[in-house]
Image 1: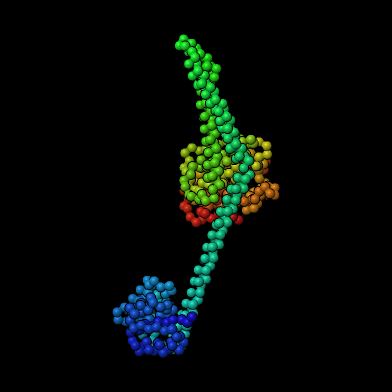
Image 2: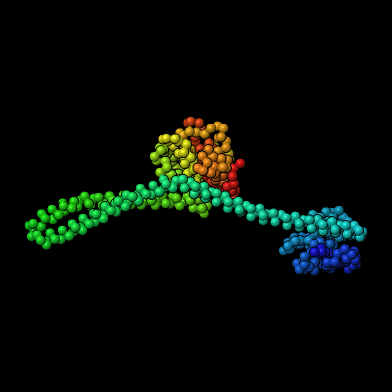
Amino acid sequence: MSNSILFVDDNPVNRQLLRSILSQEYSRLYEASEGSQCLDILQSHTIDLLLLDLNMPGISGFELLTEIPNLDLDSPPTIIVVSADKDPAIISKALKGGAADYVTTPYHRDELIARVKTHLALRSREIHLEQLVIRRTKELTNASYRLEQAQKQLIHADKMASLGQLAAGVAHEINNPVGYIHSNLMTLSDYLQDFQEYLKASKETGKACNDENFKKRAQEVYEKFDIDYLRDDVGQIINDSLNGTNQIKQIVTDLKGYSHPEQQEWLHHNIHDLLESSLNIVANQLKYKVEVQKRYQRDLPRVYCIGSQISQILINLLVNAEQAIDDHGQITITTSLSRQSLNNNQASVDICITDDGSGIEETIANRIFDPFFTTKPVGTGTGLGLSICYNIASGHGGLITMQSQPGRGSQFTVSLPVEHEQSQESNDLGFHD
């Protein structure tokens, strides 16, 4: 497509001269004799280059330099001022006002053509680069979106892998209360039958006995069915069953909050609540092998975070601590408020999970947060757990550190800022190098 040029000058002789020179090289030429006409043409046609006189009646060239950037144009034209005024101050003012070049009259034909060609070539190159930037930006945006989706899938896959490993334990934790609720319901069914027989016997006693024998016979029936015991035990059975249903409800709530892939809302969370929820999920895996000691600092401030992601960190660390213990051991969970953990000296909540297990060898300690690195047998670990945990903490403006002594155990510390400004970076969970 050929370039389009507009020249604006109130002098018809100058316009004729420009038309004569430019028409030898370019076919799409427009001309205007004053400023308002120039603005109309710019808004109705795509103009690549504008040759502009400064001294015109009505709207001057300087005023046009000010107004043209405010027009709603897809691609504003490159502007070359063509003027007889050779005052350096005027030339400087025009160039500062937005002109790309300044040509004084009388001008040589070859010089004018050369400058026009140069600026049109620069404009073409600039438009080409802009299009490349737009296309590349779109490609990067699409790639970033695909990466974000892949990262979300990895996080969710890691959650599901953890739940898969814990599935038997979770089922056992639910099965226990379901079992005794079922047993309680069977007992209540028997008690209901006894109550019905008692009511029937009481009714028959009232009909068959005279007044002096009624009370004696009623007491015998009451004692036969042991109504005092039934009454007390029914209340206890109902309380136990309600406790069981609450346990099931809590486990299901914790699992739902942990595993839901779309739960990405930033809220102020109580870290102790997240810890208790995580402990509920891994309870069966821990209780036969590990004694859990809790050293919670009172009145910790709430932490601004994505709760399900922080729970994912805690569950991973708790499961890893349990797996590091061979027979029977202890996990200690300590929480505290600190200002030394993070580099910016802001208030942070520290969560320390310490085990007395096998520890980590110094030769691999600096690799534990690398993606796909694992010390577990093939098929039992993806090597993504700690890497994902590290990046979740980083995305929250926090960090995870580790201290370990082979044969004596390990301590992982999660430090999270109390207040963290949510940004795109906060959701960037790219792998740690």
